[in-house]
Amino acid sequence: MSAPLRLYYWPAPNFGDALSHLIVEHVSGRRVEQVRPKQAELFALGSLMHVIAKHWTDHSRGEGPILWGTGLLNPFYRKDFLQNVRVRLLRGPVSAAFLRLKMTEFGDPGLLADDVIGPVAERHDRIAIVPHHSQMDDPRFVDMVEADPALHLIDVRLDPVTVCREIAASAHVFSASLHGLIVADAYGIPNTWMDPTEQGRLKYHDYAASIGRDMTYPVEIPDVPAAARAVKDHPLPYAEGIARCRESLLRHFPAELRAAQPNEVSHA
Image: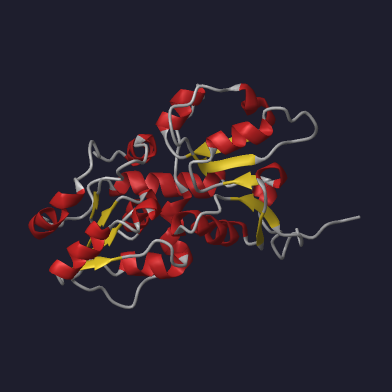
């Protein structure tokens, strides 16, 4: 187990993808190396099923990679690649339904962000605005926060530790980023789904179903300032679902990918 764990995650400048590296290192106790899909032994955070299917459909030698917490991006009807991978956990029941896998436990590894990053020193009263990384150049967000000092724009292209700490320090989070919502949930920060514009919505409903969250439709971007002024924050009503998924994530992380414990002595 001295070699790094070979992990694939989407190479976009986006904290939600890069967070996969930190979480897998934390849970496995091993160094992690970002590799290409065909070299990976693990897929974790992200909507990566289309990537996995593309690269692992024709595999026929040895054991394929393990899937732990990944999910679908868009409607998906392929199953041929499943014989070449090992599914330990999916992000949510929508992914399982499309793949026709009978599963009762789910979880997005982003729910472990607070374990990895740790607590923040103090909370503030600002409301965070977290766009999807494809929306970061939309001038409406800059205009929004310039007009209201209670709003704080978080750049999801920054490193994952910085972004997670900014989310964790917020009073409320409006997020078009899926992992903006998930990290807020991990820290118990009240949050609202914001319109991801051109992004598919399946992954949001997949996650919401995994924790029992009512997340039917997002707040439109022009309506965010008014919605932010009206928020009344309460403890997360789906906290039990978060706890259930966190437990499933830890229990289903592949034991064969964990670092050997000090008391595990091999005998020749």
